[in-house]
Length: 77
Image (cartoon, rainbow, N blue to C red; front, side, top):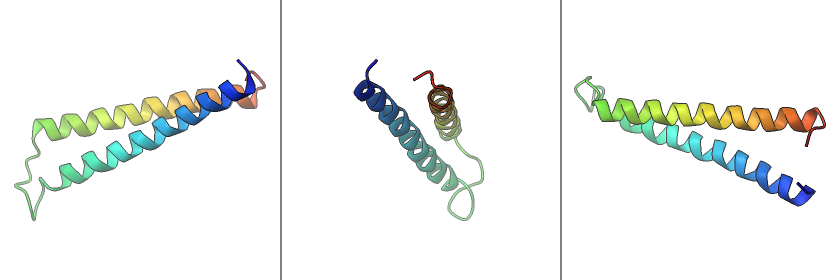
């Protein structure tokens, strides 16, 4: 992998983290509407599932980025 390809891969990994963070924020905002004063305090299963999936994607994206960063710092990239 050349330098340009490596930088493009790193950029995609960081963009994945940013996008996942935005998804968590969106899912959290939707979940909040289901609690008082606006909601009943009983979040829907879809809202909970969406929030959980967004958190999992963020965790996965961060782990992939951390691995890439570790490789970079170790001189393996």
